[in-house]
Length: 596
Image (tube, rainbow, N blue to C red; front, side):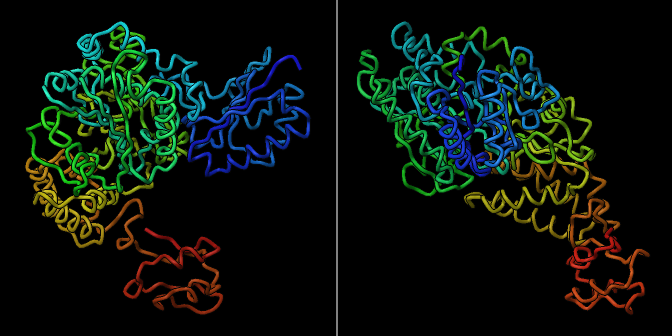
């Protein structure tokens, strides 16, 4: 066999859920059967981003990206691709872009061709549990350059020049934050990686750590040198066992290889990193609450100033950045601030990672230059809405973000443009909503989350979100009034102004943005007692159509005895007795029950 083949299989949670572990065993079995064990290498990698196509596998030579296959398909792939050098076309991701001359096979050109991967540059390519893979792609080269050729001031100047802004949500200039912390005089300083990702539908930080943990370690060590710190802490939620395992292994490998610990690379600089697990409280994503949690206290935000750069963890100057921010640091050092700042928009430089989820064909992880529009992400990369459904809204920024209607699809992805549209960048969650969703119910879902996760320290957030949720429940149950819509707006604006921390201040955003962009739906719920999407159960009306053959299945299944009728004759639903459970709709085999 003239060429050695390499098989790389995604080892991220989504692919593991789709039996990637079992597929590896089946691949090994087939290679052994055909005496190919010494001729084909098997590698595991982090998430490539194509989560809906999982399990995802890449075979080289040929760079064929396979997806949506099972263990039973492995023998065919091995025989055809490895032995006969003919890719199995039906498993190639997006076969419309298949190119097979000289055995070059490409996957989804649209999905990857419109991205620019910087923070995720190694995810899906390297084995995240092998430091040699990371080093082979210039890993720790940036750290070596910093320790041998740069002063702390020069490192900070380079980060400032790059225009990098914190990717955790607030968008504060990273270089300025480093500079402020470096100026403080203290016997001890801390560097913290905030990996407490708690937004519904968000998995950017988790996937970045699972796919490329060493870049986080390298970024933190560089920051430690720049600000004069000797200790680093990765604060990560315990619900991410795979990410926890890999960051711990990366730390151990870095220490063994001389990139961490005492006298790093013979420079005389000492820096250590430890991992602290969070219990999953959403509020601990807020930096002051996070630090209290590390100290062993209940995670609750505190007023600022003083800011963490002055008085942070254990009262010492502390630098906190999130996972994606750290992942950009080695690239800026290696490729230069000028190059990095040439990407993006005037005030938002570089790229941004998004967890694309919801009603979109290509769900997964994407990274695009700042300035890319929502339409390009949803339709060009995401592939549009499944089932030829109509786009209704996109929710950006997690539970603290806003829901933007179709008129905002050409909004550029940057901090200022999203804020002007009534949403936020947040940490990078992006949930697409189609015509089958009720915007009032969507607002209620996100407010339920933020209200439940409120730490309870300040009254505006603790009591205000509870009152807002009560009003939303009334509206979705058909008990709302016109005044309730106005009350939601007044309460929301009050909470934004008076809450102690950023999480409380942004909690009303989903409600305020849906009222602004979808007020007609609120008014339908209030005036017409109708949910156009048929989602709000209390507002549904079930009726029997002329398709009814009198089989009596609905009558037998109804728990409220609300269905009447004779055998083989059209039945009737008493709306006064109907509890709107939907059982009749589910059991009818003739599509004779209509809900409206």
